[in-house]
Image (cartoon, rainbow, N blue to C red):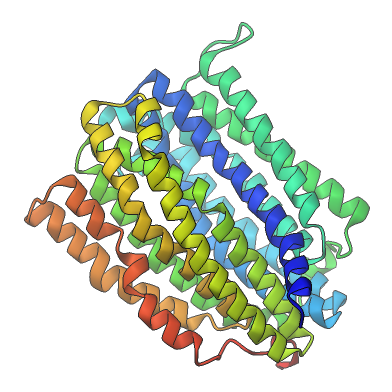
Length: 447
């Protein structure tokens, strides 16, 4: 296989996904920048409130990952009928998951916020955001299902275009609703939520239009009821470890947020900005993982196992390089970021050194994203990620971090350093497992 062929496939998939993820990452940036002008508490409230959608994404990510895993191999095998059956099954699973989170955030947002903080002002801001943002969950999750089908059938650019329109709309409406432009009443945090809901509806509508007019794989209502037992069994078999992994890792990550939240508003503000910066700079790493799963999955489904193995090797090398580069970028821009954010001097001090610590974190994040979430998942090797992440998070990061914060009462930066070691400590196990090549597997031939 020539380098040109690999690079062509990589650029056609990864570059559009990178841009799409970058556009998505601008939304929390816009929220943070616009809300911090109002107050540090407003920004912190929305930052903590979005942890609810993060927890919801643990479920939806597992569903989307399982969908992409099977869709990539079915598409590589040329089995369009199975893809349509998979499509209906995933929609059926997504709706009740979304309904649960909508119910919680719409009816008892204050109770939900108290899980993350005991600050009454931050809770009030977060509750205002959640009550309105709850409506966006249905649009976001259903659009995610449609878009993953689009990406696996050659419509990556269309998905990126839709995301671009949605994000630009979100940012513009953010300014209009938060500050009350054009004669409207300022809505503050509720305005950010309304902007998110409207733009999510727009993105969902555009996704439906593209699927109805140009889609190669169609949604059919008959597949909501008469789904394939074989596909359902495969989906559950390979998605369950991903879901368990997401829950174990995600709840642990939420606990990290809770630990930081109890270290004071300065720590919350700094950590919130760092989280946004990480996500913005990580766009290429996440795109490499998503594109890698599609590329490797296509080759495995087509029975070209040796080529899939070679793709995996190339992607792993790229993940190392991208991790180093992203870490250096964050460190280089740390002084600029600190200078332009409107937070207290103490929070700025925390922020600068937290950004510097991102150098080691980003290397681990890039490698683990591509290898565990991309390459391993492409071949249905999902159990390893669950075991590895669960042990790392619950046997080390959460208990040690909590002990450091609440028993030893170490400084905020020391606690942050410990809480961000999760991506590093599991690297040896990840590379050892990669070399076993259990992920080189054709799932379409399983009964």
